[in-house]
Length: 116
Length: 113
Image (cartoon, rainbow over all chains, first blue to last red; front, side):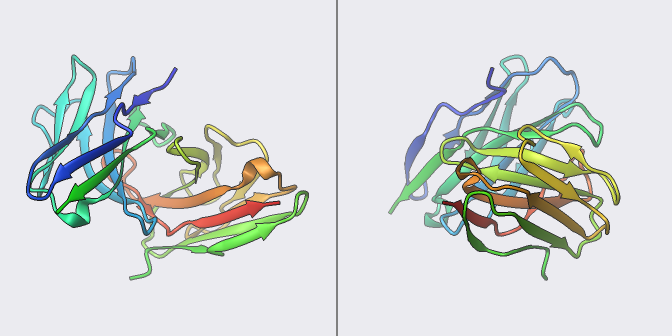
């Protein structure tokens, strides 16, 4: 069974608008971490934001925020005021557990295109 | 500001050949990882290391071996390459497996013919 689901293979957003990229996850662990990464067309992977399962507040990093709904097991990425440079693949990832041997697994990704 | 450096960046192998991918990081990170990326499948963990001299299997370890003799280097070996190992390989490292995001290398594009 897929641990990380990203149901939107491709998304379009108008420049300066906000966009939400969906991520749902499956785990029976109480302690886990959620991550979002960006991969531009140049190919490098860039870490954006982290949310811990025990964090009470949603994580924010500049224009990125993570809408964490624990009961629904969702961790959606919200990008405010989209820019052309936001066009990229976005990957949701999860670490189950809290030891160094617990692995981080990635979802299949969502392609975001920002339209001028 | 080197960060994580992967060599080589591109390689074409014939089926059955062997090769080693090198990952070097200059951030004194404890934890290092090898992932492969295939279209539509995100990244899948091959092997990882939680410290110098340690290695562990990830999701897709078959056909690969790794070594971490020095803290800054993590080597990925293919003993007998197969076309199914055609992929983009990423190395990553972090100093905080709990909250820290990974720093990734720029990737190695490997084609096995």
